[in-house]
Amino acid sequence: MQAQTTSEQKMEALFAAWMSTEGKSFVSPEVAQTYQRRVQRFKDVVQLKKPDQVPTILLTGGFVADYAGISHGEMMYDYEKAARAILKFHEDFQPDYQAASNFLPGPAFDRLGYVLYRWPGSKIPSQSLPPTMPFQMVEAEYMRADEYDQLIADPEYFCLRVYVPRICKALGGWQLLPTFFATMEMPFIPFWLGVSGAPPVMEAFQAFLEAVRLNAEYGAVSGRVSAELMSKYGMPGTIGGFSKAPFDILGDTLRGTRGVMLDMYRCPDKVLAAVERLTPIAIQMGLQAAMMSQHPFVLIPLHKGADGFMSREDFKKFYWPTLKATLLGLIEGGAVPFLFVEGGYNERLDIIAESGLPAGRTIWLFDRTDMKAVKKFFGSWACFGGNVPASLFYAGTPQEMETYVRDLIETVGQDGGFFLSPGVVVDQARPENVRAYLEAARKYGVYG
Image (cartoon, rainbow, N blue to C red; front, side, top):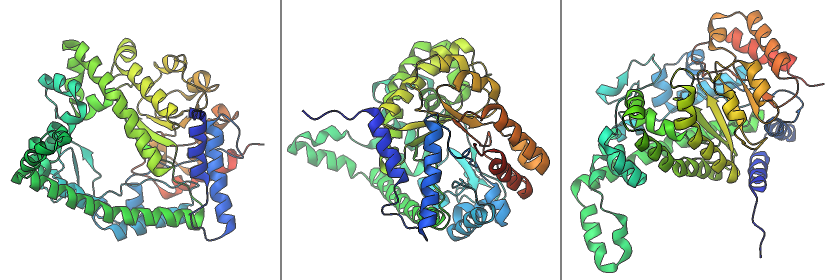
């Protein structure tokens, strides 16, 4: 009988795929070695070791466009300008890892009739923002309070036929989609195809396929830019996929903040049943992306569980159990959950640290959490970083930035298992402060 692959072996296979240079083009053997050294550096800190130096990443949003002198709208509609802006940023600042930006496929969103966000340059009048503004979410109750039973009974059915038609107006015809179980018998198929051929359904599929094509055009440029940064400079990407905490799936974009907070008191049992039902989907979403990208890191931005959103007891009841189950599912599949802990988690650290998550299998990027407390509770079992304030990038001085980075590394980063990062996505910054951040990391982040 063949031995079952362990979660550790699955993780090591994903790390090996990320680190491998096979099938990847580099301008020289030295650049290929730089790429592998940077991947190894992050692997070491995840596994609570001391690498050669502290890994340093940048979370950049609108700054990339501003630095290149183009609008946020051009970042979403003029792919070649966006590509040049991204390349210029990386060429001028030379970060060790590829930095994100607000480079997204505006034409695909337009074709979907996407109303969950507003963005610069949108061709949908209700969703359009000025070209100088970054995108913004439009929070609403896209799932009604009386629809919990439908969601719990079949989340995929609800998402495809109820939620998606509400947030993608061009896909409204999917409300009429027949069940795909009608393919189980040959005589059923003509009826199945007949209902699928209704004009609203056909129009929805046409819009979907056109959006797929438009996204492929974006993906080709995005892939080319990423490959060039890797080939010329040995810069690895840092994210292999995305997922969400089950409570955030429910609270961010289904019920909305107001709706879900009221539901916790009006129908707590339904809230708990819904987040439990969403947990396998959150696991599948992350693992599928990691397997396709052959990259272990699955980014999970945390929203509704922060201090101030809910009490400590509500966090223990509504938020943490299904998030923990999601993390364990991702870990079992070989992925490394990369938690973007937005806001403050000062009242949550002990709950998480004492929950029994396996050591060396997660990454935690903190925003406004006391890093000395993080070191106390997380230092022996989890990789962590973050906390460099966005305000320093824009309103600080290079000397203030250098001092902050030095003190942070010396206070919580001396024993390994630590990476340097801003606490949030940096939309506005002064170039000299960005350079000071990277230079200070290289100056003070070297291990003896």
